[in-house]
Image 1 (tube, rainbow, N blue to C red):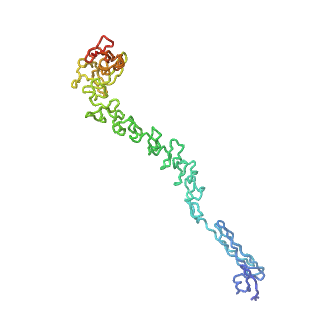
Image 2: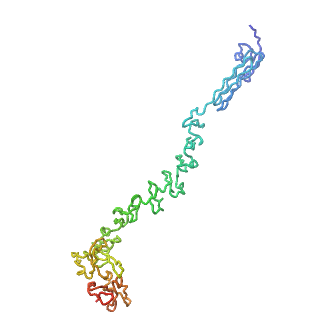
Image 3: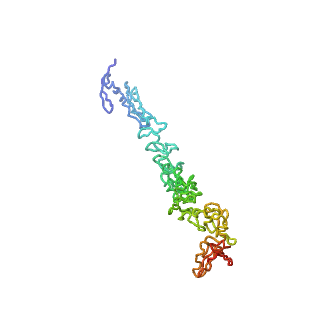
Length: 462
């Protein structure tokens, strides 16, 4: 057995000086920190290595156990500390002594972001929350949803108007829905003549959303809010014109029933497509006077103050109903040379209506109305043979024999009849002048005979 000679060595470990004897029972021998006879220190603790997260740092190098000739091997350095993500630290082996100390263990790899679980619909790791999201910036989004809403970490169509440039849905971003639209207000529709108004329910530029938007369009003043277009009408009440009071397919058209005229003030009767106040068949709107119905002007289709059957023979009339029983309201004409003029409507006997006082024959019983007009059409469309003045006119008959036609002291034919000298003439009467009628014979004159030796022939005044 080899005899061991005790001696003291100084060992530096962790910056501390250790004195021990090279003895198998000594503490430094058990921990392998005693120097060999001619050697240096055993391997000291490995360096504390480790990289920043992302790339692992190298492990710490083991202490150099430099031993000149000692038999005791140095111990390996401690393992490097955990490295950053991706790779662990690399430990260097201890060196020195007859037998080099074992290398320290490699540092453990760092943690992977979000545990490496980000994929599919949430492929991006939000480092701030360590959660998988759809995006953290717009470059991570697709062309269909090119903008990243960073408040929700979602890819959307837009977060501002610049994201809507060239978008088919519109150039304005509705940030409440993150979609591109045509408009949020009518200001966004400026310059669009046909569609200047924004429908905020659909965010589209339209022609109108109410009647006020169509007010300047006189031909189409009503807004069809279903189609957002200006039209002429939606209901008959939108059609105030009497000749087009019915709304049909958004257009005002002529009435077909009285109901179509109910909204036209004072014209509640439909006559031949036009709303009127009354007709010869329906004069109820004209009311009564002193217990007698007032008549309707058949040409104007307006109410009058004339009572029914109030007009006598050769009186002016506006409807058959105004003439006495046995008479019709007929258009008179007057022929002078080759010219025929309409005189107006007057009441005339219906030949043969003897029950109501009319003559059976105009020529023998209707003086001075001995002229016959066959199948005459009355103002209200009734056909009959009527007795009329043969030469003169009803205006001339009205002037005969009382109208003064010489107020200035000389005769004035223009003050007599309808067409002076053709139907009437101003003649001497006493110290003045009176209007008389033209005639062919005595039957044409009321009461007195026809003066035939003058031109034109006229009825006697006395």
